[in-house]
Image (tube, rainbow, N blue to C red; front, side, top):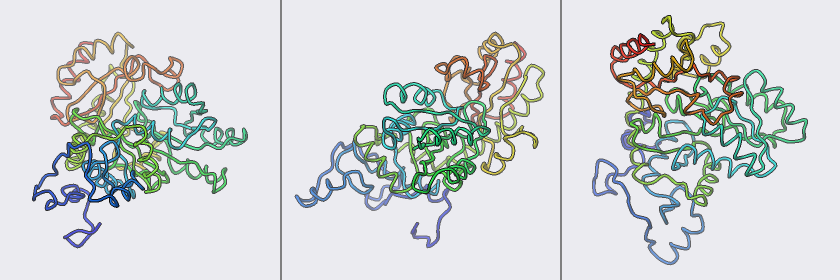
Length: 409
């Protein structure tokens, strides 16, 4: 990045102005929101030139194709992640669907890590096979090699490998480097799949999938990037070639992020590091408290992993922090879960995560309701699991809320 400072800025500094030339906006220190639907061309020739490459980064024609607020947000997120380019979308699910729409066709194979956000799981397990004729194959760390060999032996090459790590809601780790290494071992160079990592839980501050062998990072920017439960957005980061293809798909699907939401996401990146650091500090305190509580059977948070746990080495190798999602199994199943959740005073009983306020929910009946009972039980998403999305309140108050709610169980 070329700056007036004369050196490459740290992301926390670059987020204050990257992509926004204040003197092209009447000196406005803060980026304005561009509400316009369409953009004037300077001449016939200019219009012809712009329409020859409508989905390219710098082209402004119509707000379904591009807008300045998206351009700034995309430049900033790509800078944080270390990617060449970024494409923003109306939601995280819109980003994931665009990936499937652009890089898969009927008859192709998609491999995916089995523990996923409920919406992604529904897309992969139902919509893609039933509506688009795409074969989907789930895997975990232990069976990835065998599943990959089985797909290859069936004379089908996986076109896309989708990884969510840490996985929602148990924080299970998937080894990104292992997936890349094994695809390189078993598949020819020209037949390598695109590896996509959902980096919502830790990125773009505490995990860098592109450096670990992934081709694309995908985000629900609704979560930590937006950070205040007031914007719905998604994004992908990767090579310019891949992002140009996704922008073309976005143009055809009509799933671009709107200008106001793009503005809010760009602003969210300015405080992301501070917010996530505080939330993660709080999460570690909650995890430790719950791990020592007699009414809690198990805590799912990387901070309480033991050296002997299978996920420990992966966590230490690919994550820079444990994240702010703390799930736990409460003794007593659904009855205790209901009593606990209904007794909370500070935690808000709601889905989503990444916001400044702390949220609590019951994955078995809420976010992962659409996952079959067989799969939920196999993946550990039982009726006794509670998921906490830790915010930035004072940790003493959060602990007291957990304490009083558990006392009612």
